[in-house]
Image 1 (cartoon, rainbow, N blue to C red):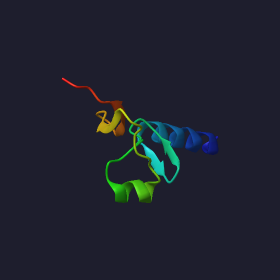
Image 2 (image 1 turned 90 degrees about the vertical axis):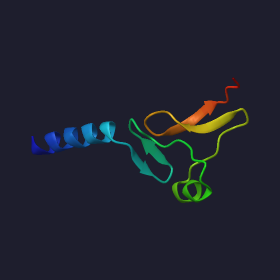
Image 3 (image 1 turned 45 degrees about the horizontal axis):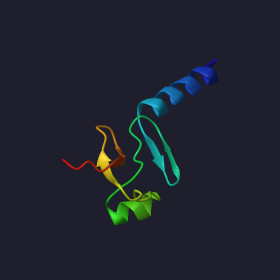
Length: 69
């Protein structure tokens, strides 16, 4: 019973906060990209494809289309 409760707590924590390990991004605030070359190298993050820019989505960063206004 204690193991099941501990497992449930770990799942809830992982789903609430981003867990970022090299090559593994899970959670609600996962960093999917970066404009900083050092951070990209350390975390194993990629850049964005043509027509997209790495931008804040309010909770982490993701590749978003470039909008010309």
